[in-house]
Image (cartoon, rainbow, N blue to C red; front, side):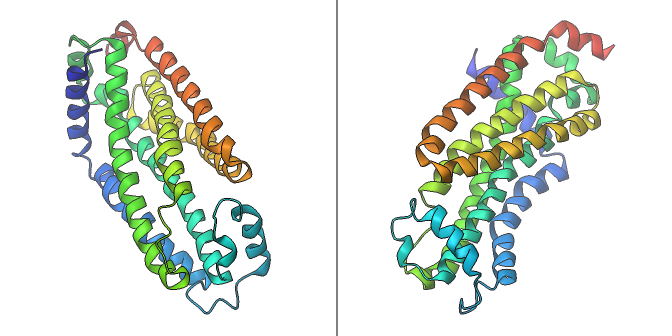
Length: 272
């Protein structure tokens, strides 16, 4: 594969995406909403800005059992700080889901969108191989999702640290858990989502069909994130080492399937 040609295809796709106000809204506004507004709303609703006397003891006990082994100075935190951190991790799961949501908007449009814009024939006549076309589509779908995730985690960390600093006297986010989860686990799951959605996009003729079928694909991916969260807090070694390896194997398998099933002849037949 020639990376210069791959990058040219990816840049072309990203320029096409910016023409859609819905995709631009998803990439720019959604990270800010999830990263800033959602934590504030949850904190206000839960009473975490209060004195902390009304924190649910059962939920604090649950968090003690889950987080005491992963955060060194956990036992020194007040119940108010523990509740706030616990809520922060819940919001963190929403942040991890966000790139998959954005990817579903972008990746479902990749191949099917080329057909609707009548640009597929021009793409297929380029020197790009089938593997390079699929890889370029994966890159162009992944980059906006990764940028959005970075904006969301930076915004989330600033908001949460402003809230937490008076309670614990130090910067807490981003911590090791959030860094590993958002910049290792979430990107791999996002790549899996991109590959799956590109596979769906090659099988249908319209963006609408690709989006609808892609929505069904997101359900097991969201379940996979939930399973990853449980696994991480149940056993950190499994969460840090074993799970990413398994996810990378899944991503490699889907890539092989996607590149083997995308063929110029079939794509051209669909254009007729």
